[in-house]
Amino acid sequence: MATKKLPIVAIVGRANVGKSSLFNAILDRREAIVAREAGTTRDSITAKATWENQDFWLVDTAGIKDPEDDFEFTIQEQITQAADSADIIWVVIEADIQITEEDRRVAKMALKTKKPVFLVVNKMDKKPKAAPEDFQRLGIKPIMMTSSTQNRGIEDLLDELISHIPKAQLEEDPNRIKIALLGRPNVGKSYLFNTLAKKQQAIVADVAGTTRDVNRAIVRYEGREIEIMDTAGIRRSGKIGVGIERFSVIRALAAIEEADVVLMLMDANELNVALDQKIAGMVKESGKGLVLVISKWDTVEEKTAFTRDELVPQIKHTYDFVPWAPLILTSSVTGQNVTKLFDLALDITKARNETKIKTTELNRWLKMVIDKHPPAGLKNRNPKLNYMIQEDESPTNFKVFGAHTKFLHWSYKRFMEREFREKFGFGGTAIKFWFFEKHETHKHGRSPTKD
Image 1: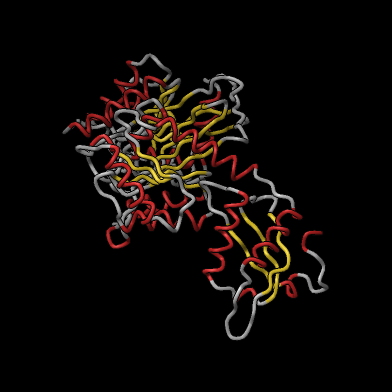
Image 2: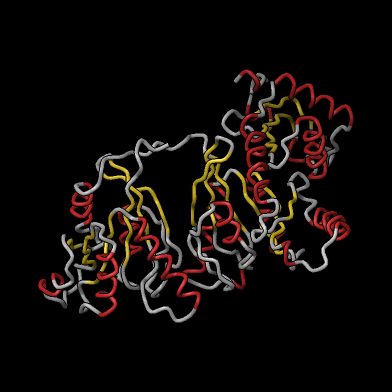
């Protein structure tokens, strides 16, 4: 919850003037994708920034230019919305290029909002081609000189900013649930993101690869804060282009690590794709919660209860390596089952974080499993499983101590997990068993449950 409404600072300007570099320099981390290609930023990217113990929202927008088609028009409309909702607008231009007609148009648009406007002359480390009076003719004060690549003028810019905005600090809810939307390009992630967020934050278009950065929105549901992350579409390795697109994929994979629950989207008209299975496998390996989401269900022709009853078992069979992941059919257009995604995320998070099992109960279960089906070994080495504990910091991780555990067959580990879930649940989330040699970890035979 915020102690006050945090002020919003929107960074606007024509393409390739260094808006994203300035955004990253202020955040002191790689948040927006930065590249020499003009028009890299498509969506408005928002992040919380802090200077002198004062918090504010920083919004990086796409470069302003004449809209050539509906897609470009959507980007320009989004910039206008970002500027309208901002408390302060930074108009960014380049020091090493003569002021262009586009720069004048951006300045005029910003001044029209009647909000406080700063002129940020970026790339001051390069030889200036415009005289100081040229900057003044844009009619914007104050004029701040910066070099985001060399971190020059940034502190002066921020000092000037906090003298114009009210003091406010944001206290982030430590119990916030983070949901990442993952999938191949054009499977409907941005549509779902907008529906969940109930606002047009990500651009939605019939162009594969629209989302490049990770977009975020925070909503409240059933008294809980939920942060939704919309990611770039993941392509097959051979289809990933160099540069910007590769950064987008890395950013999407990093979102898995940050998330508590991943919604893995699949197009209802394009199911059983090997890459979808690979993405689900990555989520499983990361140990996170997973929901298999069939999107665009409204586009399936002649769908009936029979179609659904026939389809679900097929998908479940394809994803038998994550049998614990719930499957849901959705439509962002009609809103079908969208709210249920929040309910699933809450249930999965509760299972992940609040399922605490007593060590005595775990070891009672372990003995029962071994009695039911003793582990077979390899090379005349029979594994022995002695003790088991649940990690405090990662409740979905379990340490099993014994002898010759490296000879334990993978099928026995799968058997253990199946029996474990029948007993203790953990629906919707991956769990991990870590096997340790007792004589290596506890040389004196001391029970690990006492550590």
